[in-house]
Each structure stands twice: as C-alpha cells, then as structure tokens.
Picture (cartoon, rainbow, N blue to C red):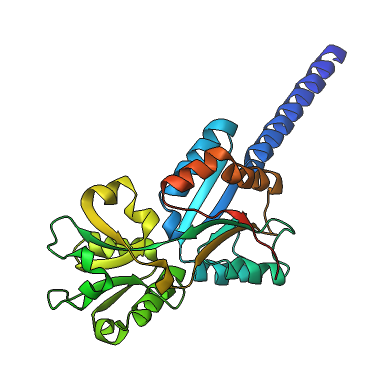
Length: 268
C-alpha cells in the first residue's frame, strides 16, 4: 500500500508539473505574439518587415490593415491592438494626449506620397498630371474616403489646389481605405486613381500599371507615425518590433516602397 501510495503521489506530481509546464509554455507563446493596426498604404511594406522580424526573432506579428481614422476610433473604444501605424501623425498624437499610449514611443516612420495610377492598357497620358482627370474619356476616378483616410484628404486637397475638384468630384469613387482605392482601379471600376506611392511600387501593381507622382506642394505632408498603445499585452515584444522598424533592416524595406523622412516626433 505504501509503495502504491508513493507511486500515485509521484504520478500526480508529474501530471501537475506537466500541466504547469504546458500552461507556462502557452503563456510565453501568447506573450510573444503582437497585434498591429496599420494604415492600408503599408499593405506590402509592413508585411515584408514583419516577415523579417519573425524570421529573426521567432515571434509572431499579426497585421490588420485599414483606414487610420477607423483604427483611431476603434482604439478609443478599446480595440485590442499593441501598436498603431497611422498614415496621419495627428491620430497617434491625439491618442497620446488622451493617455492611451506608452510614453515616449511616438515615432514618425515615414512621409507618404501620392501618385496617379492607371492600368497598362489605359491610353490616358499621365504626363498631363492631375489635368488628365478632367478628360472626357475618364468616367470614374478612385480616391480614398476623405472622411477617415488621410490619403483621401490629401487627394482632395491636391484636386482643390489644382482647381480641379469641382470638375472631378462627380466622377469620384471612394474607397474605404487607400488599398481598396487601388483595387477599384485594378478591377476596372475606375479608369484612374489617386493612390499611395508605396502601393504603386508593389510588385503586383508595378507590373499591372503605370504611375506618375503628384507634386508634393499640392497637398499637406503625409506625415505617418507609429505608437505603442497603453493597452498592449506584450509591451516588450511591441518595443522590439518598433526597434526593428527603426533599424537599418526595417528602414531599407520602407525606403524600397518609397517611404522617406523617418524621425522621432517632437512636441510643439
């Protein structure tokens, strides 16, 4: 009986130890997985950065792309993200002012650019610049929704600056974000679009169409910033990923997709 009792006790201890080990391992794995809300213009660039980070660290980065304005509203209402990459620095700054971010983590990761983009089969002359949008052959022009997409606001500003908004506005087709805007043109739902330079440089789009940069003086600077959120479940991994974005390896990827002008954001 005594031997049997010892065996039973030993077996129980082993089972409990194994259960604790599995629980701890599960918690460690969970702690090394972060969720990132990112502006849609980063669709290709940030995926590549995340893949490099995962290969180097073994940690998982879950990416969700969309409009910065919608993410901003969601985060204010408790959306569970660890980091927020915004296409407009104003959104992270507002979150910082509301005490919803980790102090000192606000960082301008890029300055975005606008381009005109049309499929290769199009006969539109992009050399005419924004004036081509008023061409009678153009029935639909895709831009992101200015109500919540920074690239949409920049596109509208450029049209106003070129004195074309009133003539072009009846043709506008609004994408939920800049990525959907690009899809509208690719799919033929619009003959031409004003999209992010970073998307035009992506392999799938550079092979499918042509682009022309829109003069930067026609729209406010698209200063883009990232911040770690106060609600982040794994702040250590979030900081590690942000450091990787700032590193030469991360910066090289961003630069390849046309992003420039990285720097800390200083308070005015």
